[in-house]
Length: 257
Length: 249
Ligand SMILES: Nc1ncnc2c1ncn2[C@@H]1O[C@H](COP(=O)(O)OP(=O)(O)OP(=O)(O)O)[C@@H](O)[C@H]1O
Ligand SMILES: [Mg+2]
Image 1 (cartoon, rainbow over the protein chains, first blue to last red):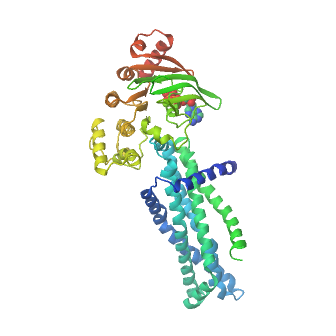
Image 2 (tube, rainbow over the protein chains, first blue to last red; image 1 turned 90 degrees about the horizontal axis):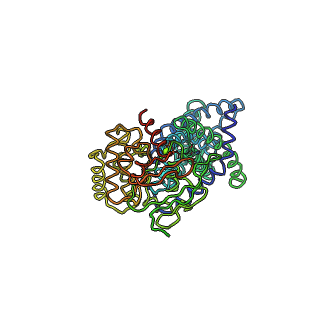
Image 3 (cartoon, chains in turn purple, cyan; image 1 turned 90 degrees about the vertical axis):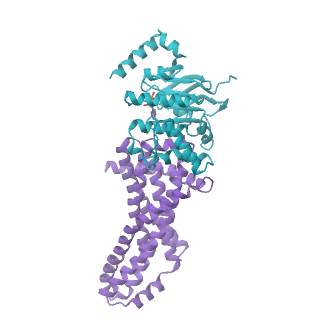
């Protein structure tokens, strides 16, 4: 509990510096030199590398949510609303949130361990000493790879979730595929999908920037790298949950009437 | 205005309450081989890191060719770091890249050389450090001594004016120490100015033409290697004896 509290207070104290790193990353993104090869490498690691867990989480969300909503609504004779409820919550909330939380675990810890270890073995200093900018070389590729990959992964998990829902609806609740898709397309508007994708993008930015920030401040050898990894996974997950509430609120007020 | 290559002028640096430098000054001329000695914790590494802007001094000035380099912005440092390179104690090789990629990194960054030219250049420096044919190996496949030599090669590959060596022989067996000193001599013979931070007195005597000793935040000794060898100043004597014990351990 005490450890949790100190972790939280470090998060609050670091918000300013994290924002500063974000600013520098954006500035560095739009001026030379660019590192396209590193960006491709990171998209490969963060995006392609996360495909399997995205498939699992997508299908699992669809199956589990549909079963629960299905039997829940059946009591009130509302089975016909299941496709609408499932697809809407997947597109707007569940797919971006769960995919991002999983990626925060996989990618956040990966970045933290890699750059954190580089920092304690002076490789980050070496980058600077060789006349390059660690933000350009290390942060920019990871930031954009996350911001590009997360919406795509979210789209995939959302689509698979809807398919998972279809399987359950057909087998458990005698809903036909035609009716299911009809309801899905009627209910979920482009704006709903977009709001989910924009969320995923923001979460991608949060994960990568927080991971890079903490890694650059890693001290204390291998133990320090371990602490950094834990901090990144816990704090970026908390940050995602907090931001999610505010973004949802903003979208509901300004976007979807 | 002197014609020194690098001037350290009255610098002060502290971490929290710990004062590391309390007015350190000295100047380097082109081609000199300086040995920087001092007990552990006297701020030798901090001094080298300050010269290349990895650390910021609290007071004083550092001049390179007459230009102030202690208060540059992060944007201006790359230019200086091409001319003054820092060779890390551990080598600090990028462990996700093989030897070729490590050595090619500064060349890709700062030159327009073609891949063939880079290949030839890397072949040349590997020959210089006596490690031919290891291009494809990862740092983890190399011994500590080899890693240090590759790290040194990486810091000289852009033909800098000055190389700062942070304890390049620490933790090496005598044969490897000889190899490392040989490499430093070869670099030095190409006209590079060197600062050699070390606790290894024989290696310093072998390589340096001038010795600077840091003690309690000040320069306690700054003279030629001959004066150092013959000095009976208590600082030098005490220092020599202490270092002798350290080496014997
Ligand atoms: N980032 C830092 N934060 C706080 N203190 C530091 C930092 N870097 C160095 N110090 C302190 O500054 C002092 C000088 O450190 P430095 O590494 O320069 O010593 P050194 O002369 O290189 O010693 P050694 O021979 O053991 O390498 C030490 O007391 C060290 O604890
Ligand atoms: Mg040191």
